[in-house]
Length: 269
Image (cartoon, rainbow, N blue to C red; front, side, top):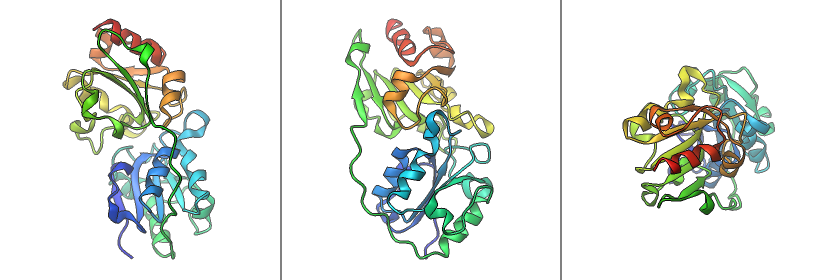
């Protein structure tokens, strides 16, 4: 069997992922699990992102069980979210689904040992999952002064058309392997992420200074206030836990609701 794929984000899975074991430093919510299944992985290990509201950070595990795909998460305190290489090097399993448990994976096991057990199993590619509901929404009533507001289930859905506008994403707030260019793909006016309970080395909020360096207002909402991986929950339920300097100068503050933060960014235009 070929070695496992080790990636900073599940959205980086290539077409050749079909039938492979994948270790991706994305959160463990349904969107990430669905993306892995869509690529046909045979097993998937993700980051629990601090678990958070309604256990959204590990909700993809039960979803993978529905497809018969072994799934597990590493503790966000054991490996930096967004850093793929950290997973097998330092990660400790925090949760496993039934399919993974049947192969001997368990909480407290190192990610490396879990991968060894998966590699010895005869695993089939994931069956193709059904399409997810729409993962991108425009909140027309929140915009103004030529600024539009988009709510996205994943930072991977940000595109060039979002330049100059505000994006509220349900992705974690960590840079991918610490690379500043991965903070956001477009020159947006402001961006909101989920703090993933900060985690090891504050990796869960590491996008903030990178956004600041590009002149972008950035904010994190607490993972305990909104469901990670669910953009509309971040919009409706989120409360700000951290901001960068640009956001603060434009009226952003810890404790604001996501809606109030976005309103301040629009008003400051």
